[in-house]
Image (cartoon, rainbow, N blue to C red; front, side):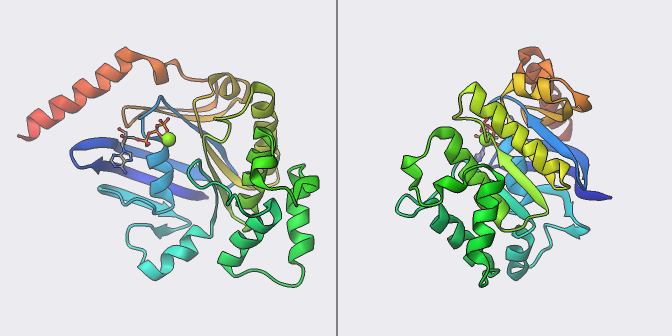
Length: 250
Ligand SMILES: Nc1ncnc2c1ncn2[C@@H]1O[C@H](COP(=O)(O)OP(=O)(O)OP(=O)(O)O)[C@@H](O)[C@H]1O
Ligand SMILES: [Mg+2]
């Protein structure tokens, strides 16, 4: 069953096109990479899913519900479907890893007497139970990434969204994190990962959506990194087609 549906989604920031006429479906339990160079629209796509941004036109449907028509007071419930790992949502520096996770569960209102056992279990599942009482700055890059993953998982999401989760990691730590994401996916969670990491994408052989200048130029199963992502001629083609369409509209 389709868990996320994009129907002709366009997102403009003033006159600039961030996503143009993007359509795809993601089924429950899929593992999907979103690739494309800087500015291609990866983060925008993820932000639209969680209603952090609003579509300019088109529709997004998550678990059967149209995202654009969700009432304001339903948005927090919508967000609770997602475990979110994004670069600009870091850990609070003055709190330990444990406290950071506690706080994020508190925000969803699901804390009970078993919280400690639960949080330790989540930290254990990503291999950093020993770091529960460490402060974020005391962690290595790989450990910090795992802590962010633990925080995302701690809310019990149906879908994990990770925006460039390996951006600051060395190749070994990046690979470890990808394997962890794969394991989480194998247990049944839908996992969507935006990334520049072409070697990792190629090794993982998952479904890959490739964005070029906001256009979805490829959607492939068990794919390797698509060269179009970095191809300046492909980018030129997308931009020229867009310019032609604009011309026609006038
Ligand atoms: N809040 C915003 N206001 C104005 N323009 C924006 C905003 N967010 C994104 N954009 C623009 O939309 C386009 C897509 O940006 P986006 O952040 O989605 O790219 P990205 O693929 O995630 O890039 P990166 O790999 O650098 O993270 C870019 O041209 C960007 O400048
Ligand atoms: Mg981004």
